[in-house]
Amino acid sequence: QVHLVESGGGLVQPGGSLRLSCTASGSSFSIYSMGWYRQNPGKQREMVAVKTSSGSTNYGVFVKGRFTISRDNAANTVYLQMNDLQPEDTAVYYCNTEVDVTHDDYWGQGTQVTVSS
Image 1 (cartoon, rainbow, N blue to C red):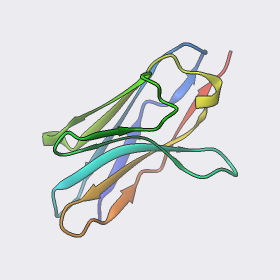
Image 2 (image 1 turned 90 degrees about the horizontal axis):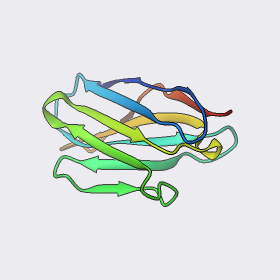
Image 3 (image 1 turned 120 degrees about the vertical axis):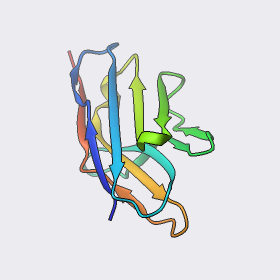
Image 4 (image 1 turned 90 degrees about the vertical axis):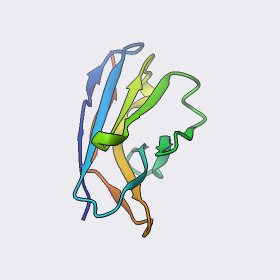
């Protein structure tokens, strides 16, 4: 069972920045991808950014160059640097990881990001 521990959420003013981090532990297999998704009540969870172990990266269309995902493969840790945050970025942000071989995926408990003046 893979355990994900997230940190870095909080309250920030519009135009501000936050950095999320997530560390995976307990996997019997190597980590294939790590990434971030977000969700608001009553809405579907949407991809924010995902990075594979080979370095391939995908971002949600709403990111528009404001967010940067990075990974420390040796530490099984993924970071999300979020700049120029706007009220519409308010959501619970969830860390996700997919492991090699079985391709099972796992979710963190979520961290709240609130952008408000």
